[in-house]
Length: 222
Image 1 (cartoon, helix red, strand yellow):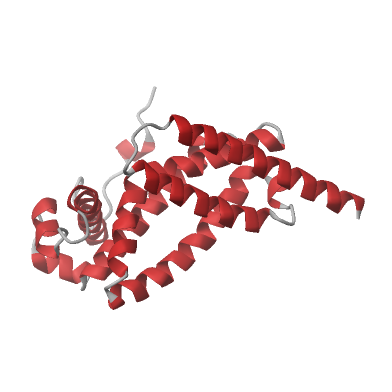
Image 2 (image 1 turned 180 degrees about the vertical axis):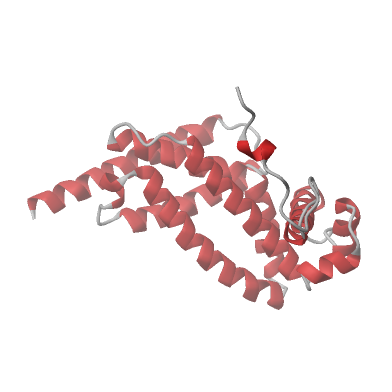
């Protein structure tokens, strides 16, 4: 068997084999800064996340950070956006597209709920709280949240499938679902036992499914 073509082709002219391009090095630096920022937000909160501490955690210079993220607001929002994009890609790759409309809707709700129990939620929560008294952060965060809201709606519609996403009340129920999930996720900070939350979430899933089913029935009769 001959080796893969990628192993037999010579390195591009002007680039030694195994040597990264400037673009690759830049992307690596950004990734290290963003990952270190998420770790810091989750471990020590927004107040304890200084740009100097993030650079030390990432093993990078202050100049590297300033080149990619001139302000702390740019850095922390960029980090949450980075993690949200990664989590969305994981959901798209993991969830099957088969099954009935109810099954797809239930899986989509479970997947979104899982995002409210990990680093993405806790890092974002730190920014929401800090933005109450930080005008610069709040302005940047509002723009970011609008973008994420649209992206999450599109992702959820893709995961839930066309039958659910096409219902008249779908967007309103999705927005309400996010509010419910945020509230339940906040409660988890004080109460570790998930038994009651799981029961209530299963109830919410059933209510959403029944509501969308009724909406679809009305649309078919009209």
